Length: 165
Image 1 (tube, rainbow, N blue to C red):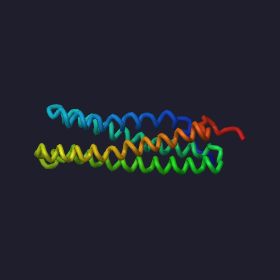
Image 2 (spheres, rainbow, N blue to C red):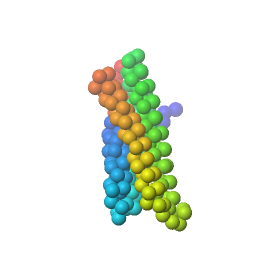
Image 3 (cartoon, helix red, strand yellow):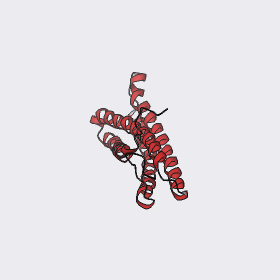
Image 4 (cartoon, rainbow, N blue to C red):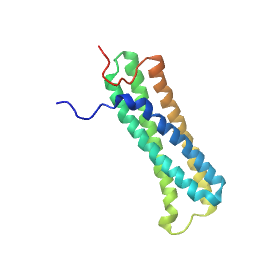
């Protein structure tokens, strides 16, 4: 029985750029909020929204990447490259998922406690979050590099339909 759902393989190259942009800008907004205390809540709200949208985009990129994998011409080099890219993408999604949860906790904690964190504690936690977010940026860069290797070096593409045999 054939699925009524389209394979989505052709949109993977377009989808992946959204989480890259969103998740690269989110830590910059966290830094801006840290340096601009009077606007921190609003700027950090924007960062949280970008994190949530970016993680959603990563999940969508994983789903569309699976569709591309089904239509790729299987060679040993390509299979190894896809495996490496997929594993890197899964790690990136996990890292940003954890970063998103941690930042959401930092954002909601004052509301739950019904009082703000001390300025020093809040600043220390935000600096720690920023340091940890470099792991996300590096993981995402590696994932993108491996994806570029698949396209430019191994010549696989996200065909709108299964490639001809």
